[in-house]
Image (cartoon, rainbow, N blue to C red; front, side, top):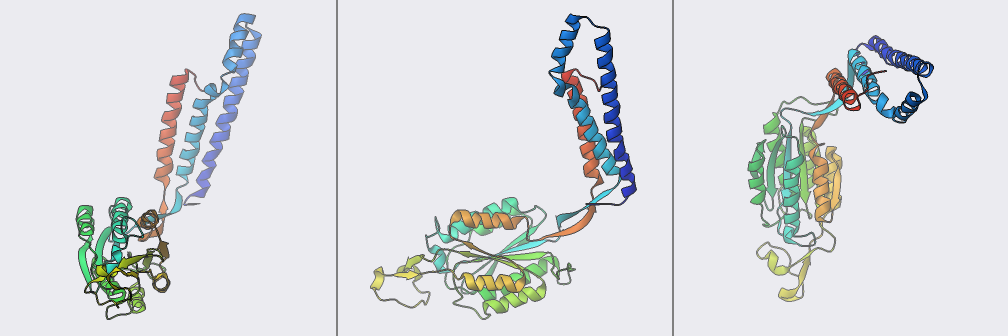
Length: 335
């Protein structure tokens, strides 16, 4: 924290000055009481002394109010995180057939949907959120909006489909984000615009035109970090019947055989590294919820220097009221 007028911090000297004056006045009153009282009165004074903290509570709050007011005079400044008025997050979600797997309860897609609902509850209200799903091809379900109910409806519509086209999904998500913040949006010191993509996938690419890292390069060029979540365990599997018509290879064992559906954290980690985002691994419903909750307040904020005098002025007013209330409740006045 810095100060625009640091020389005004001299006003804080009032705090020790008032404290010393209060101690002097209190000591003077004590001497007077001892010199002119009888034993009964002295005993009552001793009883009062046993509740010293009550006598000094009002003064302590008053001194804290003085300190806050003195700090406010010096116009303190701090680095704070805020969200841009056009800040945008695009949720990019894999809806390939493997999202039916139930190694993450109730299913991979069900856990992802629950986590996204929670994400909407925690993301700042001024941030626009959009939804893009991808399987064999990507699809824009909800354009970036601050209307959380529309987003919830879009999340409800998600259902497992076919293959996994991560690269194409990233291309569409980048275009959606750019259309929201503006293609000429100013960039911060890291070369980023106020937008981010949160990509959740549970497998390797099996479809699409663009490769995952080609899509990641598009995001990097646009100044959009991609935060990735690899969903699922290495033991996830599905019966071959769940993949009917998806063009996956048939394994020995007939209709009763199961097909492994492992996540691909390596490619998702590479996407995050290329774009300057972060990569996460979620092997349970609670973990994916924690990841989304962590990302909800961080992915599109930027830091700026801001004067916070009003914070200290407000604290001073609150503490002053507290001092008056304490004096009223304890029936004590400032020494």
